[in-house]
Length: 451
Image 1 (cartoon, rainbow, N blue to C red):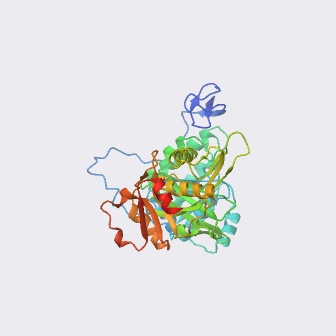
Image 2 (cartoon, helix red, strand yellow):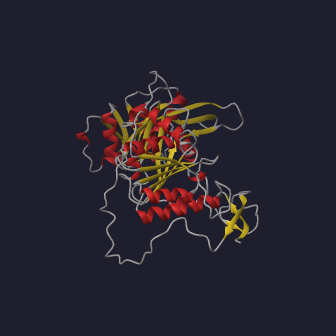
Image 3 (cartoon, rainbow, N blue to C red):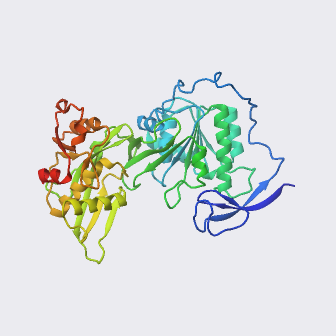
C-alpha cells in the first residue's frame, strides 16, 4: 500500500510546504497555498522505459550549432523560434483563451510534411477536424489523439515514432504517479518533467500549449518556464484581428524577436510588413498623434503613439498608459515641464501605443513627447514625419542603436523627414538616404523647428 501525504503548494511559484502559510516565503504572495495529496510510492514505475546513459567527453560530443533546424512552414513562427525547430526541444506556447494558440499549432501540424502527433485533452478529434476544414488545408501525416492520460500519450508516441508532438494543453494531462487533481501544480510539474525526459532522450520536439491565469502569466508554477527550452507568448486583444507572438525565453535564439499574425476565417495569416499594419489610417489635421521607429529583435517597426492632454477635473491629474511603461511616461512629463516650461501638472495625460503592442524601447521617447506636446498645444504634425531618439533628464536628445535600420524603414514607407539625435551622425553617411534626416541635441531645439 503506497503511503500518501498532504502537502501545500504555492500556486504562484510552486514552493512546497508541509503546512499552510498565509504569505509565501519564496515569492511573497498572499493566500496562494493550496493543499494537494501526493502519492509517495517507491515502487511506482516510470512512465516509459528510458535508455541508460553514461558520461561523454565534451570533445566526443557532436556540435549542436551545426545541426539543421526544421522549418515550421510559417515564417513568422520560424522567426520567434530562432530559425526553426530544434530536435529534442520543449516549447511552451501561452496566451489568453481564444487568442489563437491551438490554431497556429494546427496550422503548423498540417503544413509540415512530417509525422505529427496532435494530442488534445480539451477537444475531440472531430472538433479538431472541423477547425482543420475551416483552415482549408489537410495532411495525411497529422494524427489526432484525444487523451488526457500521460502514460497513454507516451506509450502511443513510443509506438508510432512521430517527428513532432503537440500537447493541447499541458494543464489537461494527468499522471498516475501523482494523486492530485488535473491541472494542479504537482500534475503540471510531473507531466512536463516526463515529456521533457522523453523529448531529450528520443530527440523529438514537443510543443506544449499552456493556459494563463487572471494576471496573464502562464498557469502553473514558475518552474514550468524554467524546465522548457522556449517560451512563446501570444499577445493582443482576442476581439481584434491582429496577434503578436513574442519570445519570452529561448535557449536556441534571441529573446527579442516577435512575429505578427492576422486572425481571419481561414486561421492565422502572416503579416510580412507589420509597420504598414500598425500605422492606422486617420483623418488629416488631428493633434496628439506621432510616429516613432522602434526595433524588436532584428526587425524595425514604425509605431503610432497617441496622446490626449486635457485639463483635469479632479484634485490630482490622471495618468494612464496602454502599451508603454507608466513610470517612463511620468519621467518624460517631468522633463517636458522642467525643460520646455509647459505646465502639465494640472493636465490629465492619456497615452496609447496603437496596434496592441507593448514596447519598452527608449527610442520612442521623442515620439511620445511630440504627441503629448501636440495634444497640449492642439497643433497637428505632418503625416510624413517620424522620430527615433531617446530623451535624457536634462532635456537632451540621446542617440539610439541601429539608427541606419530605423532610417531605412522610415524611408521604405515613404516618410519625408526623421528626427534623430545629433550624436547619431558620427561616422554615419546620411547622404545615402533619400529621406531628410534632421538632427538635434536638445528637445527644445527640435520642438522649435517642428512646431
